[in-house]
Image (cartoon, rainbow, N blue to C red):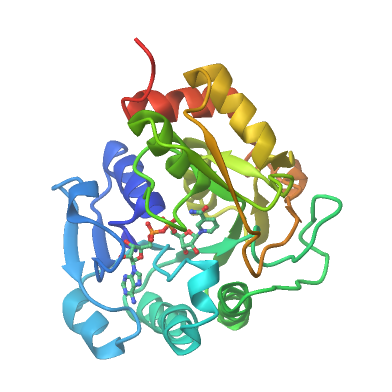
Length: 301
Ligand SMILES: NC(=O)c1ccc[n+]([C@@H]2O[C@H](COP(=O)([O-])OP(=O)(O)OC[C@H]3O[C@@H](n4cnc5c(N)ncnc54)[C@H](O)[C@@H]3O)[C@@H](O)[C@H]2O)c1
């Protein structure tokens, strides 16, 4: 198995699950936002930039690979507006190289990790896969282009459009996951910054559920595009209330101006994945927050 971006948040959880079921795992990661510390030492880490085809091929040599989970990407919506070339190079060029490598190493399936949160634009109703995409950021635009490359390749492929993932190991710095940032503030007793009026809504899906979706996609039974989310839109204010029910009252709330490229409501409808027997969400928001807070050592004893 090859996992690109395997030292990152999602990738490292996928690696753990693959190792647990007995797979040999090779990881390609340039460690730009990932961390060696996330990675089980049994995984074979190759430090390389997926946008550099010769480096990718040099690191992987002529080994045989059964399947590829392509997680590596630049992932920050706001940053993508000022670093357009970098985002295009890594997301579009990198995906092209990963597809080329997948073919060369004989893999029978590629699972392409895409975004549901940043590809549909405004979603007054949780989006189904067949609505036209309307990305509002360079990040979303390039993810849509990468999807097209996957779709037009001759490889067996599943593209998973993920909602907002949260869970242990997520980065807590600015533009990391909002759940990780909030739990970090709670833990340190620092006030929580809320952009805009806190009414904007996201679909929060727990990391272990997403890993199950990746394993389901690797079974090779399915092909095409699937939303992976809960179908429930939660506002930032509701998220704060849910966290308060797990962690006690927040240490304070600091309002800040709304950020640019912010859609008001991003939510995906996961019913196609359920209907076709690929996946359905299991973990409620409260349970996922409780498990995340416990793993981060933020629960009150
Ligand atoms: N976290 C979310 O809420 C979310 C939601 C939807 C989709 N996604 C997608 O999931 C995937 C993983 O995201 P994540 O949240 O784990 O972020 P992450 O930053 O933790 O993981 C990305 C990994 O890719 C690596 N990487 C970046 N550029 C690279 C390059 N040029 N060559 C090789 N490796 C490179 C990073 O070092 C990192 O380990 C991404 O494709 C992202 O677009 C994430």
